[in-house]
Amino acid sequence: MNGLYTALMCSFHDDGRVNEQGLREIVRYNLDVQQVDGLYVNGSTGENFLISTEQKKQIFRVVKDEVEDEAKLIAQVGSLNIDEATDLAQYATDLGYNAISAVTPFYYKFDFDEIKDYYFTILDSVDNDLIIYSIPALTGVNMNLEQFGELFAHDRIIGVKFTAPDFFLLERIRHQFPDKLIYSGFDEMLLPASVLNIDGAIGSTFNINGKRARQIFELAQNGQLNEARDVQKVTNDLITDVLSNGLYPTIKEILKVQGVDAGTLRKPMKPLTADGAKEAERIANTFIT
Ligand code: SI3
Image 1 (cartoon, rainbow, N blue to C red):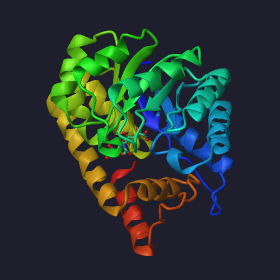
Image 2 (tube, rainbow, N blue to C red):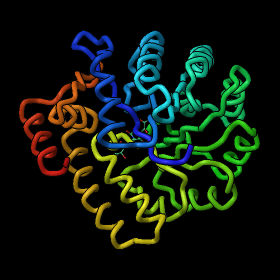
Image 3 (cartoon, helix red, strand yellow):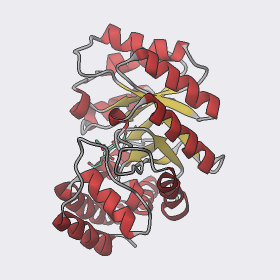
């Protein structure tokens, strides 16, 4: 399960339905052009929290049908509705997903016992491995080393998608849990995370910049830090421009410039203005080869 995983975008029609053909094109572009090792399906980048249970299942189905056994697949099933989370975990497992992942429960201020119960309830419902999705900036849930340890005590919690700029905690987790998988979640911090000996990364910008992410990861693993820094610099120039133009709509527009039908966004996310679309085209022409 090591390697680079794209946090997969999904293509939607203007009326909010899943654009299945567009989704297949996004999958193919990731596998054939960006050449990532796997896909992280129905994460934040997939607009997961804006769609229905049936649409989540439809996306799991279409992606698996397109990928078959060409790449590893991780299904993000986390939900505030525990019944939905267990239902999706079972569904993705039956489809053959290699692992499930669940975002920490958010919105209500759950205490750690409740968070632990959430993960163990999901695991009890399914015969698959689980990767914790930790993204404190969006969930408000900050877990400490001891709490990660309590979760990692479960032998089917195999790792964490660590989307936080806390390199002290990342290093401590790496040191204390050498057998667990750590995936870095912030693409602009891939190099420092790689230096700390992570097992892989999961990123939204890999949809358009997966080849550079691989260079950074592999150069760092080989100890070629100057070269890795150069590629991270170009990557961060790209990410700076993408973030200032609007993260998800800009990635979608760049995919369109590459000939991929990335469709529109789910409301309440808004599409780019005409100027924003022009800027996305400039970014694509500047950075995407
Ligand atoms: O679940 C997901 O879609 C992700 O893996 C998210 C991933 O961590 C991204 N975070 C968000 C909030 O989109 C990053 O790849 C992020 O977009 C990137 O580092 C730019 O800041």
